[in-house]
Image 1 (cartoon, rainbow, N blue to C red):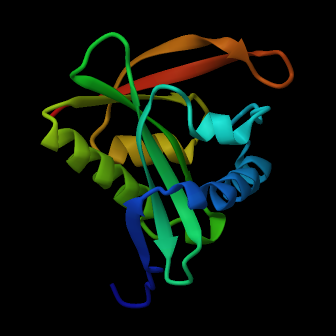
Image 2: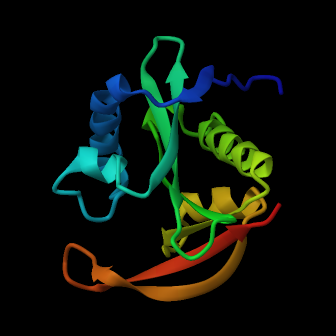
Length: 164
């Protein structure tokens, strides 16, 4: 496309040494977008929960982490995994970084003959919802979270699946 410049980012496995930059980037995203809605008391623990199976980062030419995504184990079935912890540096948005991270997870799931699911905070005009729906994710249902927003109000979650 003429006049459009996409920033180059490489998707690779997340390494322990990436965590400080991931936490810094997560802070930037939280300040700008309120994601995660509630800032975790332990950001490292939030990025490395006990049910974590795999995580990837998007890395710019400058070797800076500019995006993150993870896959979590669900206790309900071995053939379905949860996608989460997806965030992209503001300067790298609209450059397909989130789509490329989601494609990495999709390929990972295909190799395992597994389906994926995710949940996202329901928000009018949410960029995340747009990315998921354009990527073929199917909205299955909406629920009220068992946690609240910072102001104590209820949080509505949209649930999505992606079948392979």
